[in-house]
Length: 626
Image (cartoon, rainbow, N blue to C red; front, side):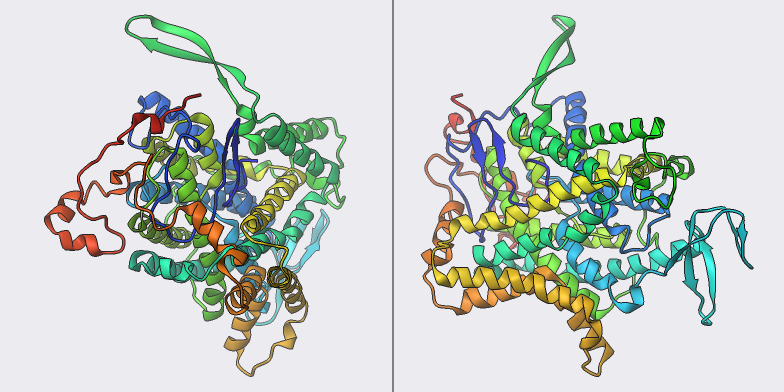
């Protein structure tokens, strides 16, 4: 299933099977014919610009599901529900900052063709922050039409009950300036936490300390941490899917059928080619569209069904009915009210606020995102027929990813940025690994993020359709985390103890803390908030317990899974037989002259040493024997 938005996803295309592993820091992996299939365009190739645009748009569509999921999940905790224009603005901002982060990563960071976008790893700490008493959403009451109060005439189906500063209450319409201030204040708190916490990622990356941290993190730490990212989101999935369960399950079934059963089926699509010799020619190109866009196609079909049911009045038109949000016209006003063109900018929701508890809680998401990203770098290099990333490229990639998170926080997307494994999967299917194509996709993300009507269109997705997408994607994230256990000997009581305690306590303690917030009373409100945010974040609790137990209980490297983990990553090897010896793919072309002139710069953890370009010794290493 290629579209998950998180790391570790298997990439399946015929005989090809590339597993994305959250690696320890390693310098290179041998590229062999078994790993590489035919690459039409390598990393440094530039396809014709019309083809660049088409392939870049394909990357945009591939990232669609994951990018859209996060704003929809955050709408509830941010108290954004009802302000459809505001939600469309956040969706546009999410695409916009994803494009900027993609351009930075492909140009100055890891320099592999990797799309950057939002991550599920930041959701759990965000939920913990927004569950604090001061960020609880105001109560909503239903005011029927033709009802008046001292300050509002009810023409809407519902309003917020907002507390005024002097302790009095008054009603504020959904989408009003007062309502916007309610969710913007919460978003500013999340923004500040992301920006400050992401500074640690920048420091760990550019200083080279990231490699030191990863020495103590193995499969038994990664597995519960990533698995709890998905498990912690079951409430959000159930809330959306429960609006009409059969629509949600239909969406899940379609995603499974497209991604697992029809992923090899190629559909003929008309193409037009223009050459000087033959002029304009029409032909059919076979593409595995079900494998490329399973989430997009499944949501489109379910959305279409909801549209038909809405037009035929098969769905209830009573806002109080539980299935009302399955209609496609409940938020159609967002398309009318949204501007055609809107450019996101830093501080658009106000000046971000910072609190110690929020920053410490967000650090758990930052660390998980860093660990997950490394696996994508190796998988992308393998599929792109590029030499595996050396340490300086890994450090630079992590550092630039941190810069992307700071930018995302400043612009107010409500999330950070990370690499997308579903777009790595697209490289394996299309055989196009051109960096220029992904940079084109980054430009498209920026441009489309400025089109307000595009974001508003996504707001109209019926809730059960979004719920079905959440069920499939969050379930896949959980499975991806558990897949790291393939390196571990799970027959030993030691490993069963580490995994069992990490998962169970990671689920139990945060749930109890959320229901008994008054139980934490240290005498300091700041300390109370810090403890509450950390202990109510599942991935932090589970990951911390796994880290302590795995590094304290006696066990061999083979038993802990570290031997296979390092062997698969090719740790400690620089080049090798059958692989590329030249690492110019990862060099910073802009600074090459400076590095060659000042060799001391090559000692920096994020700079390549001065080197000359060394082409592959055997061209067959980058081609398929089919």
